[in-house]
Image (cartoon, rainbow, N blue to C red; front, top):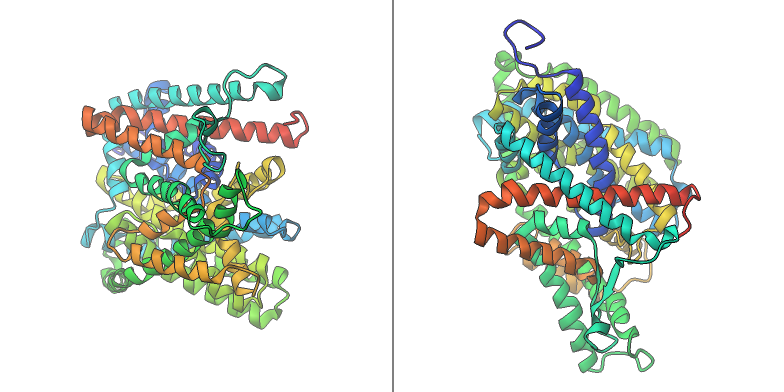
Length: 570
C-alpha cells in the first residue's frame, strides 16, 4: 500500500523507472527488427511479463495496477518507433543524411508523441466504456496482468529466450572477433541442394526473425506466400517466357527480376493496399466523429477520471509551436507557409489519430504505414517539395498515430484491471517523447555500421516511401509496374482481410533471406497450436519467442556501437 490511505500501489518510482528502462530497451531492439521485416510490435504484453518478473520475482512486491503503469510507460516509449522506421531511413537511402538536423528531428517527432496522446484524452470514456470497443491487444495484456504467478514464469522463459538468442548471435560473430566460425549467419541451401544458381534459397540463421514468425503465427503465412510467389513462381516464369535481356544469365537472373519486376510490383501493392485500407476505414471515421460528439456530452461527469481538458489545449499548443519552429527553421518556407504547413499537419494528425484509435478498437489493425505514406503525399506539396522536411513531418504523423493507438489499448487494459485513467495519461505524456529520440538515434547508428536499404537491412517500408517520393518528383521509375501492383494490392485489401495487400506487397520486395526463417516461425506456431493448444502458445511459446526477438536485436545493436566506435572491423 502506498499513496493515499486505502489505495493500491500504482504510480511508483519502481514502476516509472522499470517502464522507462524496458521501454527504451524495446524501442532500440524493435527499431532494428522493424527495419529488417518492415513491421513492429507494440510490446505491451512483453512489458507486462517483464514487469511481473521484476516487481514480484525480484522486488517481491507490486500490484496489478502498478504493473499496468509499467506496461503503459514501456509501450508508450516503444510504440512510436514505427513512425520513425517507416519514414526516416528513406532519407539515408536517398543520400540525404547530411540534411538530417537531429535536434529539430527530435523536436518534431516528440511533438508528434505529445499530439497523439492529447488528441485521444477526451475520447477514452466514449470509446471504452460507452461504445465498448474490443481493443483485442489491450484485453490480452489485461489477462497477463491478472495472472502474477503465470507472469513470473513467462518472464523466466522470456529471459531464457533472450540469453539463447544473444548467445547464438555472439557465436555467429566469432570471425569478427578473430575466432573460428562455428555457426554461420547465412546458409545457401540452393548450393547444398545443387539447384540452379538463379534460384535464391539463401537463409539467414536469425533467431530474431524466427521469433517474429513465432509471435505472428497464421497471419504471417501471407508474407511467406508472397515471397514464394515472388521468388519461386514469378522468377521462373519470367525466365521460361524469355523476358530477360540476353546478358542476364545464371546468378544474375534472380537479382534482375527482383530489382526490375517483383520489387516495383511489391511497392505498388503496398501503396494500393494502403489506399484501400483508408477507403475501408471511412465508416470508422464516421463512428469516430460520433464518438467525439458523444464525448462532448459527458461534460463534467468524467472529470475525476480524465485529465482536465486544459491538458488537451496545452498539448496541442505546445506541439503546434514545436512543429512551426521546425518547419520554419528547416523548410525555408517563410512564416505564412510554415504556419499553414504546421496547421495542416496538426489537423491531419487529429483525423489520423481518430481513425487509428477506432481501427485498433474494432479490428486491432493499425494502418500506420499507409497513413504515413498518405501524409507524405499531402505534405510534399505544402513544403515546396522539400524532401527532408516532408519525410520528417511524415515521421511526426506516424509517431502521433502510433501513440494514439497505443494510448487507447493501454487505457482499455487499465479499464479492465482497475487502473486510474488520468494516471496512465499523465505517465504517457511524460515519457512517450523518449521513443522517437531512441529510434532516430538507432537508425543513425545502423546506417553508420551496416548501411540501410541493402540485403542486411532492407528497410522495406522506407524503400517504398523513397520510390513514391521519386515518382512524385518525376524520377525515372517503373510507373507501369507500380500501377499494376497498386491495382492488385488494392483488390487484395478490398477482399475483407485488413492489410492483405500491404502484407503481400511487403513480402514481394523483402529478401528471401529473411522471409524463409520468418515463415518457418509462423509454421512452427501453427503446428504447436494444433498439437498443444492455444494455452501452450500463450504460456510457453510467445514468451520464448519474444526473448529470441529482443536478445539478438540487442546484441546486433551492441556490435553496431562497437563497429562505429572502431573497436570492431567487420
